Structure formats: C-alpha cells, structure tokens
Image (cartoon, rainbow, N blue to C red):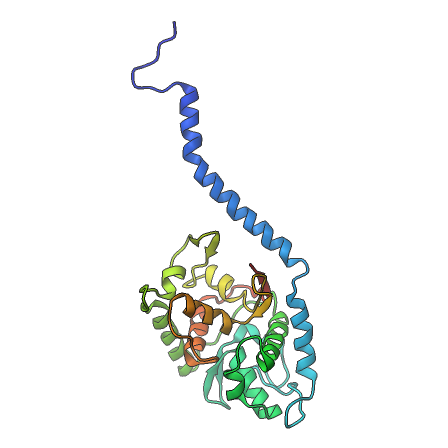
Length: 272
C-alpha cells in the first residue's frame, strides 16, 4: 500500500496545480506573440505606401493661388530637403518664431508658398480635402526618414519650454474619468484589452509610440497622422478636441519625441 505524507499532494496533482498557475502567463505570452505576428504580416503590402506615392506627387505638384510646388518648403534642414527632417521634428523655426511639428510646418509652407488658407485647412475635418493631402505629404516625408534615429533639438529656449509644457500636459488629470496621458502611457507593461501600451516617458516605449505615426488604420481604412492620433487620445479622455496643429498637440509631440531620442523611426506603420 502506498503512503503519502500528511498534507502533501500526489505528484500528478502538484503538476496540475503548477500548470494551472502558469497557464495565464503562457496564454498572455501567446497573445502578445500572436499580435506581433499579425502586425508583421500586415506590414507586407501596407496601404500607407499609396499615401506615400500621393504625398511625393503633391510635394512636386504646382497648386494653389500661387501655382507653386512645395519643393522650396524648409522642414528644418534647408529648402526642399526632406530626408532626415521627420526625426528632428517638432523643432523651432526662426521664420515663424514658433516650435512646429510636421503638420503645422506643412501648413506654413502651403500658405506661404502656394497661397492656400492655413486656417481653413486647420478647421477642415480629418480625411477631407486639403487635410487628406496633408496626410499624403506626412506619409511620404516620414517614410523618407524610416530607419533613422530621433534627435529632437532642445537648444532653443522655446524648444525647452515646449518640452516642459508637454510634460505637464502628459501628467495632467481631468475629464469625467480623471484620466491623464500618463494613466495609459506612464509605466511599463500596461495593456488595454489586447493592446500593449508603450511607456512614453522613456525609451524604448517613447520611440516605439511616437515613431510609429503616421500609420494606416485598418479599422478605419485611413492614414492617421500624429495630430489625428492625439485627437483620438483626447476623445478617449473625454476632453474637448484640441485645435489642429495647436500648441497643445505640438508640446505633447516635443515631450514624446525628446523622450524617444536615439530610437528608430518606423513610420508610416500599420495599426489595427
């Protein structure tokens, strides 16, 4: 007759107990791996490439009341220089005396070079008319810096000021749910449903989060710029929508971009 020590479980029961304890961790790992594989498959034939092609055409096309192209637009590296500009934005521009991100800088060039109405474009709904053209330009310009490292300047006093404003906004709690950006993106290993939430206060999360936009959203069938992504974050916090190319959105971009220094730009990517 087999005897067991009082209080001890038979080996089979011990194994079953351990398996049950490990199952959530195994399932979680499998879920994360599955999502990563899904995203990798989606990257092959990313529809953002169509927006890139349109953006390159728009850059060279003569348009607007002045019948001019965007080829003299200075994105920070000199008139017409595109490669490497995306990974240094937002930055200070002397001609506007402002810190500008890619979208706000494109508005400046569209107005000064082509004679288009920047204020009208800024109030146009996303995905419509000239806003759709901006999305194409953003897709192409970001793609020209894909694989390069983020290196946002913090030399000018206004750049430093915008970083501090962005930091305060990131941690500011409010709205009916008392949310802040930091609620979802202020710590490691956070998730919502099946979505990993990058920690935007440091690398690698800051570069992975900031450097992946613009991105093609499968769920909406549209390309979203960083401005549009931030707009949706404000919606989820139940805050009023910020103005397009507002100082609030640019400050948040500075905060994330500076935190992501040295990280690799992967935009335009593809998202669920």
